[in-house]
Length: 133
Ligand SMILES: [Zn+2]
Image (cartoon, rainbow, N blue to C red):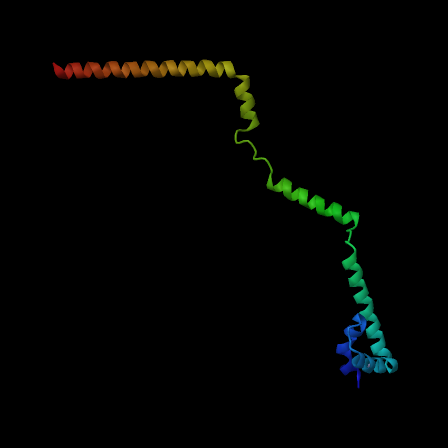
């Protein structure tokens, strides 16, 4: 037997999954081949590492947790950023500082519109009266 024939069985050696006859056949090669012995040891080491990972919950390092939390918070802030007011603060300040003047101006404007409406109504009445005669 040669290395190419043995290579597919090396993971089985690491996991102890080979049958007796196959195990003896692979062991006979491993006793004579340093390269395949090294490969089998490497596979056994990786397999033990994977088993250890499965048994313990991996704990990420603190800097990684902080980095992830900062990214999540930045995303949260970006997504829920309050909509800036449509009316600029300067305009709000000017309006509130001149509330009395604006109220007076609005009253004058309303009075003017009422006077205009009365005038138009009186003009219509007069023209109707003139047409009738
Ligand atoms: Zn070999």
